[in-house]
Length: 157
Image (cartoon, rainbow, N blue to C red):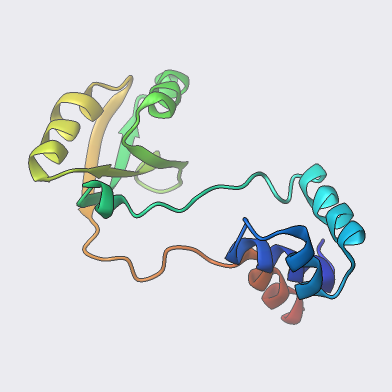
């Protein structure tokens, strides 16, 4: 698990993954080399899986975001998952419990594109039996700080 210093490092990188090691080290109270070693250890442990840029889909013309519950014929689950991996408009896919087998998060440019995605593309993915679509009206919370989540969990014990 993360100690307090690792949580500070993770929290700082969650805020700005482009920060330099000099700035990061200063922020968490270490010198540059020990800070780099801790980041490297977090990467090697798989805690830090990579670094990415957060994009605003609406600014690129993707004005529709939807969540789709998908029920499939389970013997086609591997083919379905491979098709989902390859589809450029499916942002996230989770295998779920409950009535649906998967929950997809997708983006499209408008309602006509969403209709096409549902009727022509998604319905034809391997094994799809049924879909239920919910539209996102607005985002209330888009992410969490995992460093803060770990700290919160440790405080509750």
